[in-house]
Image: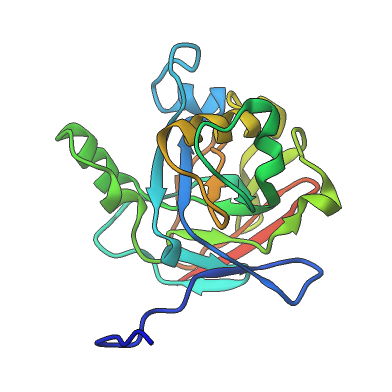
Length: 229
């Protein structure tokens, strides 16, 4: 029987559509600049860069319908709407043809970013954690099993703020598709059941403000709603 000096935190989980079970989250990986128009928007050439990844902490997850505080220590917090991929299996050096066998399901996520702190870190050649891994930085909808919807590789992805469309694209515009993300990640990390992959955002990223209502979605997957106070 293991004893602890204090009670360990609860395992972060996501609800599952159509089930009373919850999905325990192990790690959160994010794919950078995975839509060509967003790469150009951020000043990069999408034709020359291999995929790159960063992480958020699992305890930064926020459920659909939540109200969050405007993040501390920033004057420029940006929204990035994304498809989220949830893994039921993992491993190392996963072959491309086996990658989708690892997927449990999909959700809609927001990669909230303290852009000013991220930009300062970039200029100084420092890690991005202060811009990406802060509290409530990863809102995410309930998971929809792939057994129910298959593996979406096309469909509208969008974000509205106070009813006005700010981001809009299509999953077929992703530079690196879901199997390629999984295969590449598995050469860098030992993937595991419970891992999430935030799959990149289309163009139109921009600031949020106190009082904003954010509503986003991925066609065939679901929607996500968030209020900022």
